[in-house]
Length: 124
Image 1 (cartoon, rainbow, N blue to C red):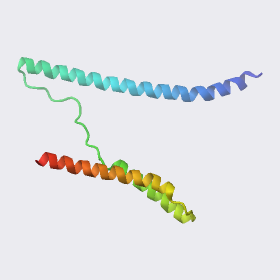
Image 2 (cartoon, helix red, strand yellow):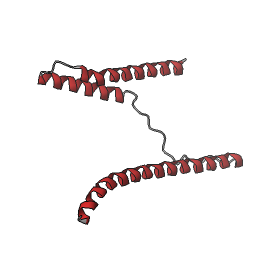
Image 3 (tube, helix red, strand yellow):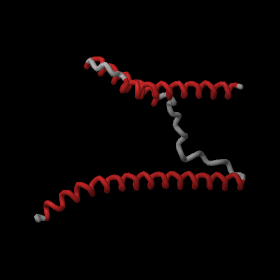
Image 4 (cartoon, one colour):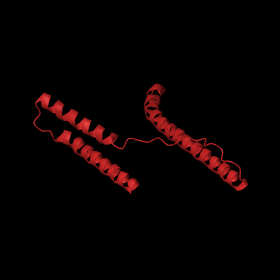
């Protein structure tokens, strides 16, 4: 058997494995780095409070406010796109579009109700 014929199947298996392990490793390293920075900033602020020194400015950026409706809109749009495509093709079964559209509507409504409840709680 030719060695080239043996190497190609092994490489076809090893490349995705190496990519996945490398990606997970990079993500873990980034998470550990961020956690270490937050811990060091916390220690610095505690030391400043103990000594009565004015607090240093926060080094970490403030948390981003995320749009709670985004996944609802994405799923609704995807479901509508599937339903329109099925309508154009003359497909009578629109159920596949509803599989994405209805959970999208549920996520959208849940986010909307949660936002309203949070606003009422903050105003009270």
